[in-house]
Amino acid sequence: MSSVEIVPFSEDHIEAAASLVAARYRTERELNKSLPARYEKPDAILERLRPFANGRADIAVMCQGQLKGFLLGLIFPLRGVRTAWSPDWGHAVNPVRDYETYREMYTALAPRWVANGCFDHAVTVLAHERAVSDAWFSLGFGMAGIDALRDLSPVKGAPSKVEIRRATLEDIDVVLRLTVGLQRHLATSPIFMPLMTYRERRFHEEWLSNRDKVLWLASLSREIVGHMRLGPVDAPYAPMPVSDKETVAISGAFAWEDHRSRGIGTALLDHSLQWARSAGYKNCSVDFESANILGSRFWHRSGFRPVCYSLVRRIDERIAWAHENRDEIDLLRGL
Ligand SMILES: CC(C)(COP(=O)(O)OP(=O)(O)OC[C@H]1O[C@@H](n2cnc3c(N)ncnc32)[C@H](O)[C@@H]1OP(=O)(O)O)[C@@H](O)C(=O)NCCC(=O)NCCS
Image (cartoon, rainbow, N blue to C red; front, side, top):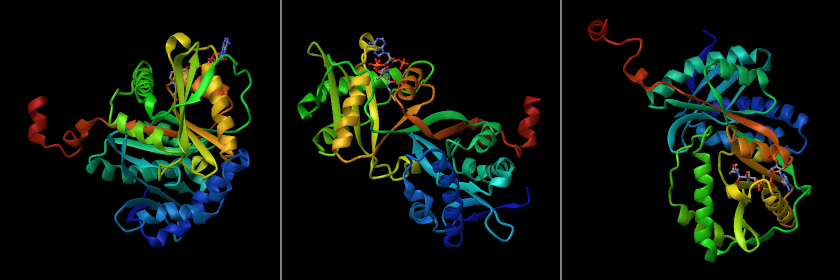
């Protein structure tokens, strides 16, 4: 325990931290050559870490003379909930003792997150990191999200009777209905993602007006039955394996329930990949809830391979007052 200390993240740490992250990434890429090569070198990771190395963010470090590990938590609104999140480029350890070291670093840093009002904790790990995931599972984390990647080769079995066209601004109402349909699905068991809407109309008006972003509509006998949305990755903290100019990201796919399992999703995906090839992309990514049974089955069957797992933990908020130092007088009343 004593080998872990908490220090402000600064320029003193970033080179060693970036080298440790690059080593993890190289191992992942050895297993999956379709990952972008750029994060094998520490420079691309330095770009990510530098904005946080200003002495304001805390990291847990294992030092012993040289940096043996680090854990950085960004305070981030994940799905609208204030969360302390360590992205895939925000942590690393010397692999010899990764299980124990991660447990020790989290033990040291988590009280700061809780004191800062973050009861939701998240970490994103690379797909090959089994011992690292086991460490987080042992700490009460569970799997929530999967980022997956595939090349742009055509999908087999796309039915020809599905008509596909690009949505324009004139389609905004049907696009919003499909989007709400997808959100309703994500609110069902066992996903239970709260159905919250936030500026959906404005977001989609921008999407449909942007030449680099597309939304395909699928029709059967002139009835619009599904959609697929894709565009460049523009999230600044997106996981390394999917953050690349040559990777296009699918950010939504949906078919009305009555029309599922007839190849509409496959036809939309095949069309999307064809468009991505002509637009000069090399890879396609998607992220989905691990509890989304229909979604995860579809993406796995369609050739997407997991590259990152996001693990989450929700801490009982009563710990803010029912903590180890709770006043004895208060306790005696309840005994
Ligand atoms: C994911 C989704 C878009 C797939 O659309 P779909 O039109 O049902 O997809 P397809 O019909 O091409 O493929 C679905 C299944 O039907 C099967 N299938 C496809 N064509 C078929 C046919 N002609 N006959 C029988 N089965 C067929 C496929 O093998 C596939 O099997 P799977 O369950 O192992 O994946 C759809 O299930 C959906 O809208 N789900 C809810 C929203 C959602 O989860 N979206 C993804 C968010 S990340």
